Image 1: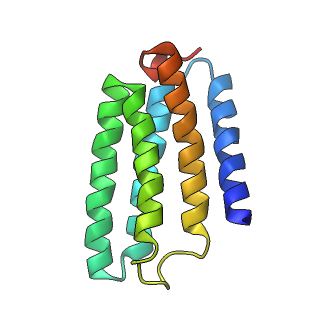
Image 2: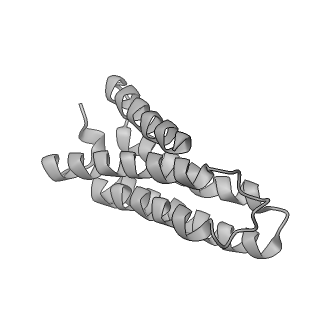
Length: 134
């Protein structure tokens, strides 16, 4: 429960923080976050070769999705956050238990879905790239 509360409140905090940053390309910020959250798992799993390979592949896929999302569409960035939240749910039961911190899957799922919902709502309402956020 606590990881979920922290995830939701962190997502809301970041959304408001980015909203107040008027001179910054918001799509770039969200894309950087999407890239970073993919690579966090690489740091968690570096001691287990099988998990490391899987996490490196997912990290590169999220990097590519973030890059295309930044260039093309807020919908793709939103989809990236939803996919990463889904990754958190699917990977946690199979990851070696000593590698992923307890509650991290719920924290990451909720922050990903909070930001993904916002990005999808914004893209739907404005039908344009996130860099047009005012």
